[in-house]
Length: 158
Image (cartoon, helix red, strand yellow):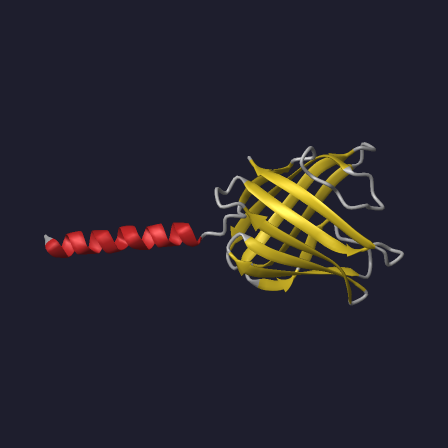
């Protein structure tokens, strides 16, 4: 009887640990435009945007959908290693010469480095709030003329 209780207790702790270790960025997020300060872009800003983040095997997969203020669709699907690696696009690839590298600092805390022709042009630091309800992206970089840009995107869990 004690052995069964011990095994049951170990299993409960093991499942609790696995649940706590899950990356809090996994889920469905909607861009909160009222709280965001979007950086300048060559494209029209989003009118609404949603992203679904999933862990699939050893990868993080992100599907982005929405609509821009000019009526054009936002549709993107990309993935990277859960820990660090080149972001690969399955749909909605960036312009030629652009690439991105994802780096996990800790669950719910990551950096995405944006490169143009191998040169760093921007960094996105994403941090999920302790309560798991908000994902805050701080964006720093340079525009096409080499001038500094900053932005803030607030994503609400759905």
